[in-house]
Length: 126
Image (cartoon, rainbow, N blue to C red; front, side, top):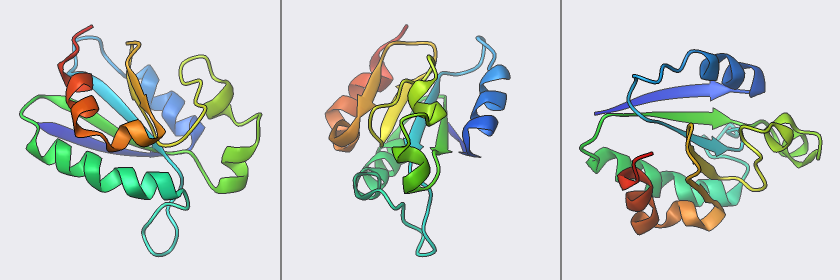
């Protein structure tokens, strides 16, 4: 079963990661641009990836925690000093990015739209 969590901003991301227990199911973070009033992200690649990822997760028969992380608006994200870019745990270069927590596996940009790559990410055990 997939447990969904929504997080907004770097401070909440940091707080959440401090609570992750190594005995818990695997945690995947999906980093995306903040939502516009129409419900879609300002990031066109995120808009493209989100339905693919959600459809994949709806079929997943595995215990995981899927954390949607709002990285902020376009100007905040584009700033080179954005903590999501500079933090050693995330080192984001593009959004969307999916990171398996405490692992090296990640999908970036258009890779997030690829069901085969999503499947490989779920199968790889650390």
